[in-house]
Image 1 (spheres, rainbow over the protein chains, first blue to last red):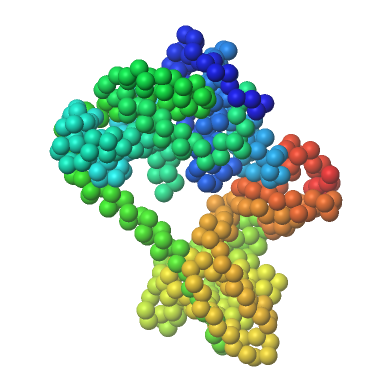
Image 2 (cartoon, rainbow over the protein chains, first blue to last red):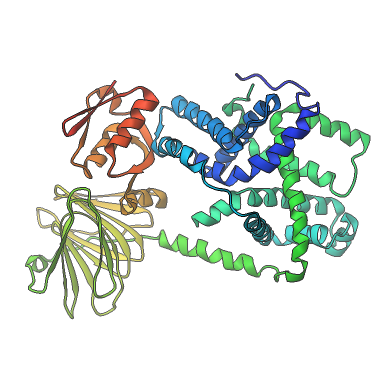
Length: 190
Length: 326
């Protein structure tokens, strides 16, 4: 069970198909997935770890065959992971278990209109951008919106190019978390 | 095939950052051969790396759409400050204080203008007084309210109630319960009276709690945020709770009970407050089993079902009892 994945297992052409499927079908489920996992783990880092574990299991399985329904597959994997954890900890997370009963229903909800999704995505991105630390935000805006080079950004901000890269890296991480559900979820709870 | 959870703890964050570094390095430029080899090695090291990279790269590509916002740029800094306010108000809401002083026996006599509110077992009820104060009654609770020009007086006979008091400087809001007196100064607080025991938890604002013991000694205590004062006929104790625990105690307002590492025996007792159908733990070895979770207060069968499915614990319904055993 605990063996490391084979080196280069994603090296063949299948990896591209799994990647497309993962980005298109699985990542949009992240908000719902983290909300589900949060029932088991309150700490954000722990939820991230569980989420990562779900992604790893899902993608490794998808290499053999891409599941027909991403949603039911992702939540089946999450459910098994949660059950393993619960047994290991001798703790009964009742809400997790009752959620598991409800998952069958949740999987049937119709997908929202594409234009609604597009608008929602833009709104999420804008909110994520607003939330970045000021200097980091400045660098991301110049890179992504004004399309300036790192050198130009460094000159304008009067910082080293390396620092520009660091700001942008932080921006990428924060945008990914916000875009795929972390921030949106926290807001909903606030 | 998968990496075990223990190996991964607190790792996801680091891997996400590394993925961000690789996305940034390739943004608008190609990697040199040396970097390329390093990148490939990093990707091959674990599926978690590869997946994190796909995720970060997809998010950064989606952010191309931000260029559509070029025209509607918002001023910097302003929105962050605005977002701080809810955090601050939440912090203040967690603040909580109370003190114990002498009880006033005079308040015990019923008044003419008194209104009585009650709930049956399993019932909740929200009431709004004419002064704007909201009171939520939990299961099996009886209280009387009398509003006069000089004061607003509540007598809690038994049960549990959550108060959101509209403060009035010249008309105090007083709750009398089991010989104790709580005077509000603009607060949200929870009072539970259980077979001679009183528990007061203050969520917001300030309140004063006055009490007198069976030797007529007066007691007072000032509570700091997160404290809960418990008073019996002759003792006073104070515990500190986190705001989360306090919110858990208010779960009943939403019709749910929240457990956090609660022994099964206590969970069953809590459950039994709300339902005619009582849960009985037959195996002593199960009494200490810690449980987490949120469940519908009015559905002991769901609770039994979960125990059965998850741990192969027996749960049998016998008349009005659900018997839990190994």
